[in-house]
Image: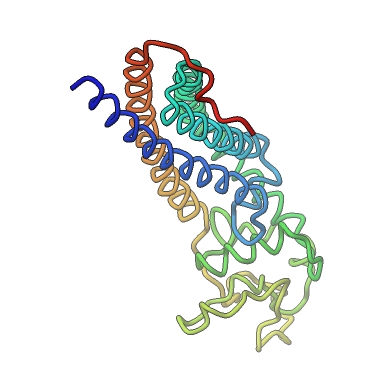
Length: 268
């Protein structure tokens, strides 16, 4: 009965660690995506926000370590090597502590992240130049076109851009232009555009004449971040539960394996 229980635990732990290995690869890929993404609001944050870069490197480190732990767990479970099972338990405990610490840190720094976002976007709008081709500008154009918003608090944020307001004709940010549903799949325009009636100069470049979305992007972007952070939090809770189960199974198997036999360790 005891040997049968050990065998079931061993192969269940093997399948569990195979899943853990795949999960580590997903976390690693998510961290890399944060660093290399150039077509969304993530690229603005990872270029300008130190804490967001730290978060990306934390995801990469945890993902890589999780993959290593999954591999060691599979090896230790199949070959019944107590030292590998003990190492697996210890590293799982360290990963769990690191996840809880990181979660608490980001929870209490959400306000600072929101302030950073506002400062980053406001500075970006103020320094926006027509025809620059800058990655941050292109990312913000993409956000405004896809989310269907303009500016940070409102479209009036663009009145702080000196190049735009010095235009004598009615000129506005192209990515802010109101569009139909059919235009959603079209790549967003970049730079500044002149309105069809842009030859009027009596009132200069009056923002009230701009054919743009008037709602700012702040609430929509923050809502998007909250939604995705909620998904990330749910995944992390699920991972923590799986880690606790893995710790229990590895400790159970480690206690049941009485003799240390290093001949079972595969040699390469």
